[in-house]
Structures are given as structure tokens and as C-alpha cells.
Image (cartoon, rainbow, N blue to C red):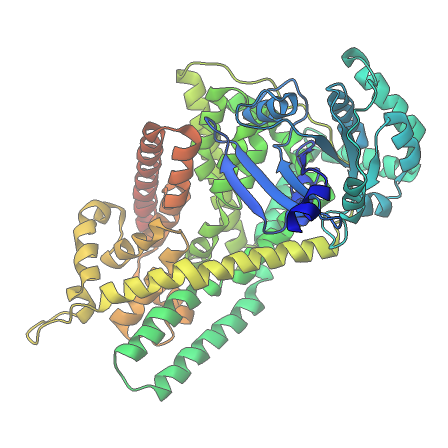
Length: 618
């Protein structure tokens, strides 16, 4: 019976999602396949291969392949080469798709339709997914879907990948899909003219929208005014991180302190109380308190991304990056590294020339990732007074802005040195079509912030919790003998490790407590804050060390030590995951070794200079 039923079902359908980068293709893939996904690398390269499956209402099985984003089949990067080879059926071990689903951004068809016409020349069955139709509607863009479908000679459907039912039209189209190739539309030389004709016949953009775009771009893209606007936006961002987050941080600190006090009152003195108060609460709570600042930072980044400002920032900075020796395509990977160096390094796959890609990978860790923010915020709060400069500029936000700027300038200097003394050439300037301006969607911003908060809290409840407990153990055992005259923590494993490391770190002003905190910081930078909280809670009996850590280190450290640790964290490669990704993306332990040596050397030299400058200032 089962075999008879299965024999009536159509053969499984093999489809591939293709499209330009940032068209919402991966969001659509996630909407279609949910958790039924497999992610691996294509053989011989580091480009990710994402495959999933879904079952239509008719029972037909559909295999879905999410191909890397590409602007053209004339490949200029490993990502585009993979997409071209799979579409042509030239990728070993990969079946040629039965159907191409070309996902396009409905708000930017001028750029995306060219790739649709190029794909149509392959002779494969196709359909077009007009994605982000909600954004197009909000901006007053009207698309005659039926006319576009008629002119393309292939099905055209509307999708909104971020909505729960946003892929229903695609599922319906797949149910009735017949495998027939589209007609040849235009020779390659006439693609641009064909796109212009299609836009004129099928797309209506309000004149008001175009006028606003032109007016804003005249200022935002101006070589002088535009750079001033960019600097002002970044400056405002870092001012807000300190100014607006204060009340929320105070509330979290109060809650953490109350929790530690409650446990101290109701549990007798002993190992369990020490574990809960000095290990778990002091360790995880000291990092959790910086969640409001991290979310504020990402609020700005998400708003800038949603509005269409970030590609314009790339346009402004492209000339400076080329002058320093970086490819124009390096902007997006380096921008991604401000969230985390790992996706930033992976994003270098879009860079064609191996020399430019390697250089971008090497300088990506110099971008200040969000994991450094808790360390920066702790040290700035402890050593930089909360006052204004020129009457309205917060000094703490100004210092934070300077730390981010120093990382960027160092990356440009390193790239220039490699260009000056190295070999090879740099790619031509980045060519890109700028999207229209749009108001950020509050729902999308909220979803992005919830996702970021979830990632952070999972890290607090996962790796940071585990390392805090491990550090508590190292700082609590073994117990000192009766004739020991120092503190108990100095006799512990942590005390011995810290004093052994001081041989290397004493010249830059680090005490043994800092040395101990650097060890778990190798797994994740922000763990150094929880490490300091745990060590000082155990060593000093601070029941609420999470909320008292900043004034505690301000009282016990010199200004030079605080500045040295800030300088150290600008450069030091204290994230093993980043090093692992460098190894995976370059296929070379030699590149990992070079990264470690030059970043540690920069960190030590910068900390040494900062320590002695701090000594002179104090």
C-alpha cells in the first residue's frame, strides 16, 4: 500500500535560491526549511554550503540549496564562482538544480533585474521572488507583477521572508511548477538596456521618494560634509552608549547586589555560598550589567543599516581604504567585525584577490567587536571621570569613541605598511549601487535587538558561567596551610598562575589578578570582566563584587594600569574562536601564527606606552 502511494507522488524537486547579496535570500531559505538544514563547506573551499528540505501540501519533497550571493555569473570571488558552477552543473558532486528561484529586493530592482536576465540565459527553469514587498509598499513603490511576469516569460511571485506566512506564494508556485525554461530575453551586451525597458514598463517610484534620495545624497555623499556627518553619527553613537544606558545599568546592578545580599544572608558561610556569590553572581553579573550598552550600540547599527546609510559610508571610506592598501570590497567585512570578527572574516570570501583577502583577514581583529565593550565600559567607568568637555560632550563617550577610532586607524596603518613593503596589487575601487533611503521598520529593529540580547544572555549563561565557575575553583583551591601569612587566594592555583605570568606582564603594569583574568578571556573577551569580579570577590570578600568592581579597581590600580589594560584590549587576539576561523578561512597555521605574533606585539607595546603615560599623568 505504501509503495503504491509513494509511486503516485512526483519526483523530488531540486531548487536553488540565487540572488544578489542582501536580498533576503537566506531569510527566505530559513523560512522554507526551518530546522531541516545542513551546513557544511564546499569541497576544497571555505564557502558555506547550505541545504535544507521541505514537504509541500501535496506530499512532494523539495530539496532547497541556498547558493552564495552573487552579482554576476562572471565570477570575481569564490562565492560567485560556486554559484556559477552549480547553476551550470559544473560543480563536482553537486546536482544541477531543476529550478532556480531568483530572489530580488523589490526596493532595488534596477540592480537585481540584471542578474535575473543573466540567469535566464542559462536555459534553466526559473521563477522570480519579489522579496521585501512590505518595504517597497511603505516607500510607495508600485510593481506591476503580472506585466513583469509576462515580459520575463517566467513566474513572478511576491514574498516577505521575515513574516510567518511570507513564503506562502512561493510554496503555492512550487506545487504547480512545470519544468520549462524561460525564453532567451536579451544578449549580454543589451542587459542594461533590457533592465531599463523592464523598469519603465513595470515599476513606478514616487517622484517624491527620488527627490528625497537625491537631496539627502547631495549632503551625505559630499567628500567633506559627508565625512563630517559620518564622524558626527559615530560620535553620537558612543556618547549615547554611556549617557542613555546609565539608568538601566543601575537597575541591573541593584538587582545583582540584592541577589548576592539575599543569598549571603540566608546561606551559612561555606563553599556553596562562595560558589553562588563569589563565582556565579559576581562572575556572570559583572558582565550582564553591560547588556544595555551593547543593545544601544546595536540599536544605532541596525538603524543605520535599515535606513540605507551604511552603503553610503562604504562609498565615503572607499578612497581612504584603497590608499591604505585595502580593497574597496573590504569595507563590509570590516564593518561586520564591529559586531564580531568571526562573521567579518567569513565575509572576506567576497574579495577576489588572495592578497587583499588575506590582508583584510589579518586586520579584521583590530575592529572593536561588541565583546570588548564590557571591558572598555568597566575601565572607562573606573578611570575616566563622568564629566563634560566644552560644556556638553561627555568625556567617557569621547574616550570610547577614541578607542574605536584607534583600532580603525591602526588597521589602516598596518594595511599601508604591508602595501608599502609587500608585493601584489590591490583591487579596483568598490562598485556598488546605493539603495534608496527608507525609514527603519521598528518591528525589524526590535527583532534584531531581541536576537542580539538572546545571543548575549546565552553567552552569559553558557561559556561565561562555565568559565566563572572554573575560575572560582582555581581561586578557591587548594586551601592554604595554617602557617600561611598571605591571603587564601594567593596560595590558590590562580594565585600561582598569576604570579608566574607577571614576569611577562609586570613591565606593562598588570598585577597578578589581571593576569589571571586574561586566561579565561582567551575564550571570550568579556569573560575578563567576570574573571576580575570573581578574583576580587574571593580575595577581598566583596559579596556584591559585580556592582562594586569599578570603584574597587579604581581604588587599587594606578591610572597607568587602567590605561594599559585599555590599550591591551584594543589589539590583543584574546578570542580562540577568531583564531580558529582564521585557520579555517586561510587553510594555514602560518597565518594564525603571524596574527598572534603581530597582535600580541602591538598589544604589549601599546600597553607599555600607555602605562608610562598614565604614570606621568598621575
